[in-house]
Picture 1 (cartoon, rainbow, N blue to C red):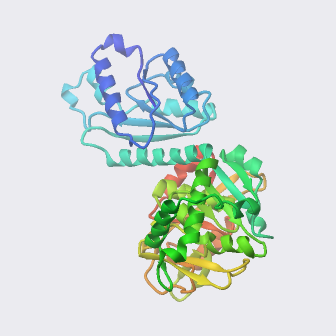
Picture 2 (cartoon, one colour; picture 1 turned 135 degrees about the vertical axis):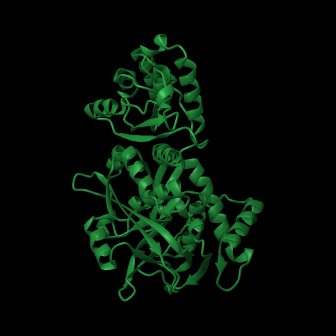
Picture 3 (tube, rainbow, N blue to C red; picture 1 turned 45 degrees about the horizontal axis):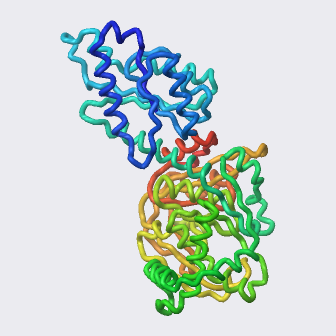
Length: 463
């Protein structure tokens, strides 16, 4: 971040300097402590702007926040951002809420009351430079919750960019056979989204827990699993001991490989050690999701990204797809089998049970069900166009009370602002994969900021 003012004003009105410096220092304190600020200082010349730009490039920033203190020419801004490929958020906050018209002199106007006429100039030049941008206008005096909310959303969105660039996605096996909507070009993924793929064969995964011998760590993880799930037939450490051993191994693997996302699918014979691991992958990966590692079934890397985005910006993010429609009640039934997010199960503690057959998949084993609360919900799908460019598909709705399926899959009863048949048509026509991610709350505004940072288009189905 940095701030700008017109250098010509400062010798004319020296009292502006301490005023601007104080405003800038106070503004920095309003940003959340979850971010690292790379401080370009108060800029009043092209040379200072160039120095700020050098600092920003060296730090590989995810976002630039620019406070406009008063009028300033655009040469104070452009050199700082010219060589960056991130959005510039122009913060146009006036110090005083209302002028004292009769008693306002020029330095008071320039220092305390200039809701910056330079914003249009800055945007015009950012447009000509091909830079992404946004504007926030507000006031300092008395506090401004709207400005604070916008800044916090931008910081959350920037954390998605940082997570994608500095963690990897694991692909174990390959996507579910013939689900061609899930297929992906990993090189294109890296170029467009900054996410690097590490590929793993199941043969390596079968041996992942062979060296885990720390019984205290296994016991602690077993207790964590029992605290996370209600298990059909009763909870006991012995029942989940092997599962806990694999979870310990997977947690270490995630750290060693610097993984933030995992997409996996097993299509083997589910016998021997392969069958043992496959039977407990769903709850094991659910434990990883609990620790903010997005884990998607059926090898869907795109929905793993959607889960990671929602988890990062909202604290919840679970896998879902269209299940059924209750036409008389105008309700969409949305959910999925497989690994889920403990943090979204706010209506009830997640449950786990053993089933003889995973529908449509090899083998059987532990199945988990999570229970999202009633109230606001956001859905995010990620797809690609014919040129390989990514697109977000989003919708907000409200989860309703009522009956859900009881065969072990996570389910939500969602009513949208449009009829369910219209939602199904519009969502499908947007061309997402058949999977989506779900989060508690309304997050389209933050997703739009993520999209601007990632340079991705957004199709809003309803809100």
